[in-house]
Each structure stands twice: as C-alpha cells, then as structure tokens.
Image (cartoon, rainbow, N blue to C red; front, side, top):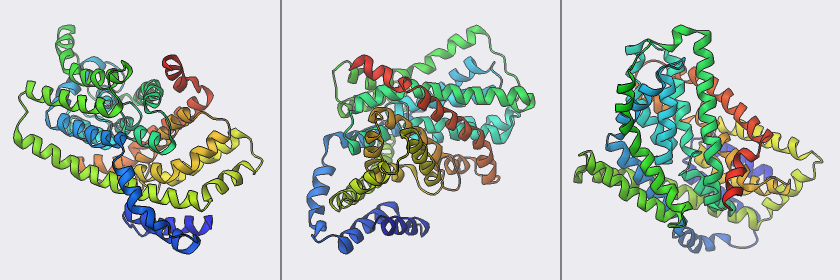
Length: 427
C-alpha cells in the first residue's frame, strides 16, 4: 500500500499536476481503494475546522506584512545601510546580500519575498562593481532561504500546526541557527573571494560618518522584528496577534516614508489573497491526505517499519536527511513540509530526538531544496528578476551555498543545543 501511494505521488509530481490537486487525488484514491469507510465524507468538516484554525490566520497576516514592506521601499535603505557596514569584507556587497536577507527575513517570514526584494535592489551592482556574476546571484538565492528559518517564519508555524509543537518554542529555536547559517554563508563568500580576489568586485570605501548616517535605514526591519517577536515573548500576544501588530506597524512605516496609498494597499491585499489562497488550498488537501493515511494505519506502519530496521538513531536520521535532499530536487518546499512532516516527525521523535530541534533541522533541509535544481524556487525568482542570461548561472552560483547548508546540518546534529538553548532558557 505504501509503495503504491508513493509511486502515485511521484507520478503526479512528474506530470506537473498542481500540488493541491495532487494531494487531493492521492487522498481520495487511498480512500476509495483501501478504506472500508467513506472517509471523504469527513472532508467538509475537516476543511471547516482546519480552515478556521486561529493559528492559520497568522499566515495571511505575515504575507500581508511582507507585501506592504516590499511596496514601501524599505528594502533599498536597508540594503544601503548593510552595504556601508559590510563592504570591507572579502566579497563586498555579497555580504550585504546575506545581511539584508537575514534582516528582511526577520520581518517577512517568506523566502520568495526575501529573494525578490533583495534581488531587485542588489542585481544592478553586478556590472556596476564587476562582481563574479554567478557567485553574486547565488548569494541572493541563498540569502533568501533564510526567510523560512529566522522568525517569524510561516513554515515554522505550519510545522508547529502539523506536529502539535509549540510555535513560540520553534521561533526561539530558529533564531540562533538562522544567524549562524547567515554567518556560514558569509564565510563561504569570504573564502571564495580570498582565493579569487577578482570575484569580490570593485572595492568601495565609506567614511565612518557615512556609515553612521546609514544606520537609520536598518531600524525599520528591526522595529518590525521587535513588535512581532517581542510581543510574543513578552506575553502580550499570540503568534497570530503578533502578526496583526506587525501589519499595523508596517502600515505605520509605509506612512512615515510617504508610500502609503489606497493603490499600494490594494496591490498588497491582492498579492496576499493570491498567495494565501494557494497556501491554504495545499494545507487543506494535505490535512485530508494525512487524515486518510493515519486512519488507514500507514503512518504507524511506517514508524514501526523504520524503527524495526535495527539502525541506530543517527543512521536513521542520516537516511531521512538523504531522503529530503533527494526529494528537494523534485518537489517544492511547502509541499514537502505539508506531505512529509506528519509522517517523518513521529519517526524522529520515536528515535529520541526533540521535535523542536527537528523542526529547525527540517527548515534547513527545506532551505536546501529552495536552491537545488531543477525545482529550486529561489533560483527561478532570481533568474526572473535578472531577465537575461542562462539559468545555469544561478544554479552554479548557488552550489557553494548548498554545501554550506550541508555543513549547517552537520553543526545542528553535532550541537543540538544551538537550537534548544533559547527554548530551554525561556520554557
């Protein structure tokens, strides 16, 4: 049964069937062929209960927050501030790509929005400063992946919902690994540019007065981060309420910079509705599929089959990591999260690993999928903004950062407290 369902899923993915439709077809097929009960009759009640879940309201709010910041022009000033403080490092503005992505990720919670925003601002610098184009493009694509790890992350909310794990704990757990991963990216850039100085582009020199003058450009994303994450850990708001506070703060910032208008809000709301509709359709289809699989006993059978293989916990974990790396080459990250997290997390927990720690590890693996061809979403986002040249340039430029992510996976396995220290401190 497991083999047939897995083969059907693979077939639907290879046929480029929309993800929500593929998951729905898979759930209905498993119900019709393997269940003695009409499980599809529970679909209406299931859609209503899960669609009205208070925690899920945070998703459109975080999407709206990112849309408003994107249209308020805050990214340009933020990038300028990062460029003036990080330009002396080997690699120059490529470090600004990573730093700006980390800072924007702490406000938008979306990898695609982060890549699109920073890419729009940064790409003109390639020819202007004579950077190695491939590595520069790779740094934008890799920096954007930080959006699903650094809180407030939409993917962490979904993982918490699917696995019944505390979202505030997941946010705390993702913060330090997110910063460490950004540093690993910057070290990767520095090593390449030390080995090939010409790749680092034309040197730019700023005075300390210019650097200090650029600091106000870094304040808006920090303010949003403090409003959203600070309100959660101060006990003033739930994640959903914190997302609403973030939207109010972003509207205030847009008004402060003179970008607030009815037309801007209309475009932001329209973009939010499109993105949210896509996400919610996939979520509801995945919830139904997970309900069918668990009712048929497939989830429990999978846990028992893997734990009964006699492998050590570490060997099983490495097997799971290989599974995600391969799957990430063919499947989009949100689909991977929604289809696999409810199945894989019970196996990992049964092996004795912490679900909060695994949530962070899973985000890093999903980040890897964002920049591995042929389905790496961030690769297409960057190439779409570039609007010239070959897609291969972005793919080749992203490869060093894929290796850096594997190094981050190894760091998390070797030092799990990197993710668990902050949650343990607060809870």
